[in-house]
Image 1 (cartoon, rainbow, N blue to C red):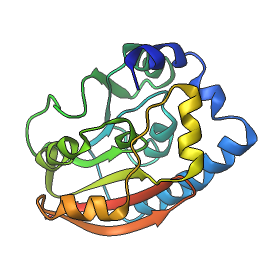
Image 2 (cartoon, rainbow, N blue to C red):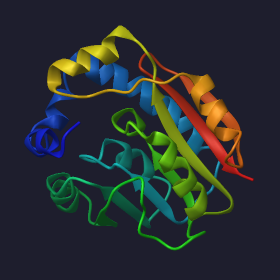
Image 3 (cartoon, one colour):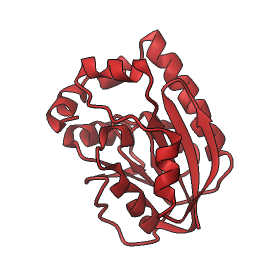
Image 4 (cartoon, helix red, strand yellow):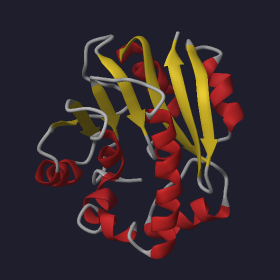
Length: 192
């Protein structure tokens, strides 16, 4: 999706999530992510693709130190208004501006479906995770509702679990747990 469309949607995207159907979907997705968060301990968290902060609300119960990243300035401005305990950084998920092994947990929730060359993101996540660190990622499944997001101007790249498994043959991660929701396949990965 182009940055231009995200700039426009930054002012009302959170309202789109409040309609009953979207709220129900988000509730189910949040429950899945919550089960992952209960299984791990993390002190230094990076959230890739923070958007308006929907996923960040889940993380703030588990840490007092989070770095959030997005490639749309307007989204980061909204984050700065709503969350005082985070450090927002503008960057691209494929080239992360941090030193190696500096985070215990990295989340990439609802992001990879917007990145055509998503296979560049996972090596970066692996590089930044401390030994034994965890990553939470989601992949959008090829479901007709995901394709309906095209009406909002979203360009979606759906993927299957086998796509992730094929990529993990080259990146030392172990799938610790996974959940499936209507629109997402959620994975808890551990750096090995």
